[in-house]
Amino acid sequence: MRTRHLLAAITVAAPLLATAALSAPAQAATTTWTVVNPNSDGTFSAVSGPLVVKNKSGATIFTCPSLISSGSLPAGTRTTSGLGAIKSTNPFTCTSPDGTAWQGGFTAAAGASNFTGKSYNAATGTTSISNGDLFNSINLIFRTTVGNSCAFWTHHTSMTYANATSTLAASTAVVKVATSEGGTPTCQGLLTQGETIGFATEYKVTPAIKITARVS
Image (tube, rainbow, N blue to C red; front, side, top):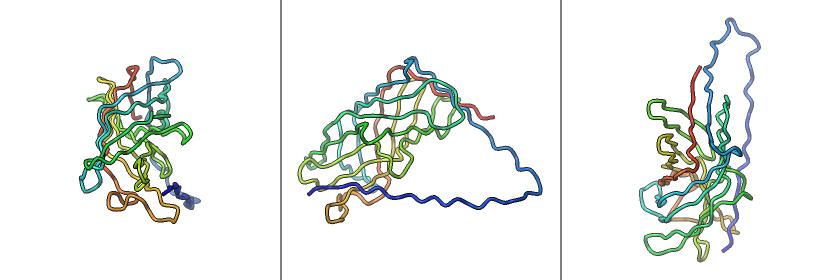
């Protein structure tokens, strides 16, 4: 069975703006992000330990031994929350508890998977990040290697980056399930469209990058 990806069209309705105000609104706080990357071209590489993927019920779908990713976290200071992106992840093989083989990976052909800074904890030197925070963003693509009985990709992956250890830890992700040629969703009995799954792994990032933020 061949699978195909359906990307939902996103329609944004612009709100009407008030034409007059009795008093000037309070100025919104501005978050200034600073990235220090020893690589002048802004690149990084990251190698993870095991990745454990669980559905919303807590059942393990499969486990992968390791992920090897690369991307860009350019040095500089900015007031936008876009920090960088994962641009590729090498192909890898995973195994479900019943022995089913899965294949995963991500290539530049799918587009970069952006990092969006959500918050920064100065006391711990830790940044909360959303990886791929658009509905049609692709973090990683997974499929069963025999029969294509299930195929899906992840987006809106929740991550934290720790300056002290140069580690990028993932905890959860949202799934977009592929459909069969006839339009029937795959992964039936394993995943449902748009569910939040457990997506636990921890990357070691090279070089040692530092991310900080201040609010003014």
